[in-house]
Image 1 (tube, rainbow, N blue to C red):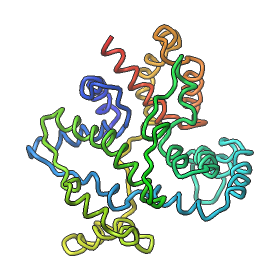
Image 2 (image 1 turned 60 degrees about the vertical axis):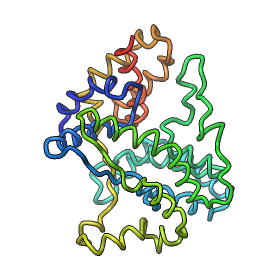
Image 3 (image 1 turned 120 degrees about the vertical axis):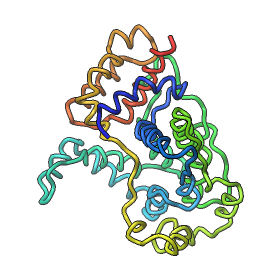
Image 4 (image 1 turned 90 degrees about the horizontal axis):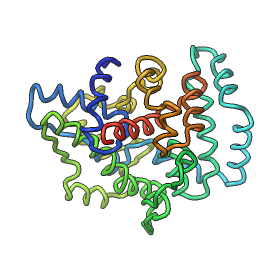
Length: 311
């Protein structure tokens, strides 16, 4: 996929989603749906399998962090944070075999914030957030109370991994993944079906012991046993890959003028939703290459594009 193809899709996003929707994989999802529609009228999606059978790597983070005492984690976080992200990235770039830093410093600093988490819910919120204090970017508003912040469900009796999976089933899956796939596919009149979310499969998955879903470090163990009967192992035993695009680079180059127009300082001040100072500082830091703010910027840009289309 090229940035030119992405630019052809971007003007359609506010109408396609009919709300500010900022998962950047919405672009390749739309293009894949468009391609599939050339051959079929109905498609099957594997969405839901990760949430039901412990497929995401982040599910194991809480368990591993729980093995370390909080004072030790806090001390480690202070040590990491004492060195700037830029310095960490420069040091990493000097290591043998590394040609570029890939924002390792930013990842280490985010990891430091995770180390200081005092609860499972705090850790989960840190993992899924693009900014540590989103309210600081908004004018006269605070983040609303949600299932992730302020109105968290009890979910009594679940382990740290099971709790993260349950929260994903209640938030990330229905509010992000399913919205993305449904509106992308229906935007080209492609029907999508999700067999893993048949209520009988969901009930069966939750009846299985956690030790079977994640067995000897192997995620989605039951599904793999079924697939081995029908699919060659070399098509299964591969590193997990997200459906991502090089958004950070595109924003610095081919999408820069489009983004600059939506993030114009006078425009932000006139509209009155975002504090222009922090947004412009984040935008400048991203353009410099010091930090990768693409996920956060995309959220702001999708709101701005939706606002422009509906005012």
